Amino acid sequence: MYPTFEKEALAEGEKAVATAFKEIGEVEEKREERDKKLADRLEAGTSSPTTPRPSGNA
Image 1: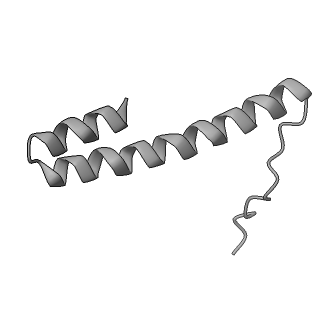
Image 2 (image 1 turned 45 degrees about the horizontal axis):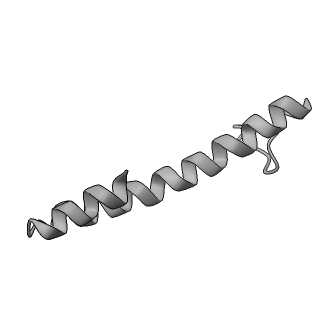
């Protein structure tokens, strides 16, 4: 979806808008990967993340 928006913005001469769509697309790809990993862990019954969260006792 976002690559198409990026191409359309470039075709219309909207470089800043195209850049925004490109960056949004990159963020969405990473979010999708993260969500997939979480869903896989939940289905496997191992919902703990691979990186421990800070305890908040700083």
